[in-house]
Each structure stands twice: as C-alpha cells, then as structure tokens.
Length: 237
Image (cartoon, rainbow, N blue to C red; front, top):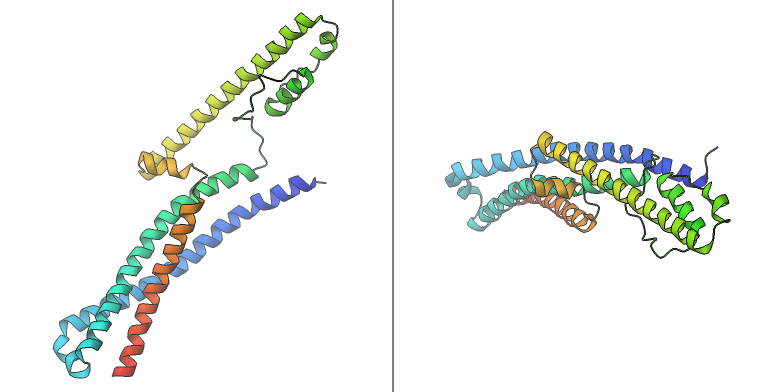
C-alpha cells in the first residue's frame, strides 16, 4: 500500500505522458485545419489578384480591398501561429523537464543543500547526511557521547566537512550530467546554446503563457478572417 504523498506523485507523473500526447494530438488537428484555411486564403487571394477586372464588376472597390486585407491577415496569422507555437513548445518542454524531475519516483542526492556550517547539533548533521546523501554515520553517536568537548567539536566539524564535500561532488556531477544532456540535445536537434539552455530552465511560465496566448490569437485571427471573407462575399454577391 502506497503512502498518500507517494500516491499523489505517481498519479501526476503518469499523467504527464497523457498531457504530452493530448497536446500533440490537439496541435496536429489544429495544424491540419489551419493548413486548409491558409490554403484556401492563398487560393482566394491569387484568384482575386489575377482576375481583378472581373471581380470589380461584381464587387465595389472597398469590398474587394477588405476581402484582400482579410485574406492576407488569414495567411499571415496562419504563419505566425506556427512560429508562435514552436516558441511555445520550447518553453513547454523546459517546464516539462522540470515536472518530470519533480514528480519522478527516482530519488537523487541533494544538489542544492542548505548551509550547515552553523549547525551545532551532531544528530542533525548525521540526519542530513542520511536524508540528503544516504550516508549513514549514526554509529558515531555511541563513541561521540564519551568524548570531551574539544574532541566532540573536532568530530562535529569533520562531519560538517564530510557533508560539504559530498554536496560539492553531487552538485558537480549533476552539472556535468546537465551539460552532457544539453550538448546531446544540441547535436541531435541542431539547437543553439541559447535555445538549449532555455529547454533546461524551469522559469519559463511567463513566456509560456505569453506565447500560448499569441498562438491562440493567431489561430483565431486566421480562422475568423477567412470566415469573414466568406460572409462578405455571400452578402455582397
């Protein structure tokens, strides 16, 4: 039987793959739909421009101008939609990496430990060694209680130094692993250093919201502009 915290972490971790699949499914559908819209808009724009003389017989100057503007807006918005979504995806992947690490049931050593240089309780230092780095030195307590104050201080400082050395080694190893992962992604996808670094940052929430909003606006603008053209032509024809 799982403990409540473990149960919640497992549920959210398993849900991440479903969220990713749903996002890809929704994007693929919306992109197919927008390809049709942009394709019709390009076709309509081409037909009007190449047969402008004939259209002037059925529509007045301002109607044709509005239609051309709307078709152009539909095409441009469709292009911007794809661009905005690609940037949105970069920031989403950055947050996705962070979430996978946060909800993963894999335990790793602490890579950002607190400063324990001012800690005077040897039991707390031993507890931190065990929790943060799975280094069990609790057997020292039996001998520690028999020492004089000066020797106790030496043992305490040695344990603090031990903690700091393990912490430094774990942090360096983590940084090396992250650099290796970034380099692998750069080579695999041909990314720049700036883009690769963004993928491994967890502070992309504001940009994610911004480009998510811009993606939605460009999608709606493209669709509504084309629909407006159809309505105008039906009314004015």
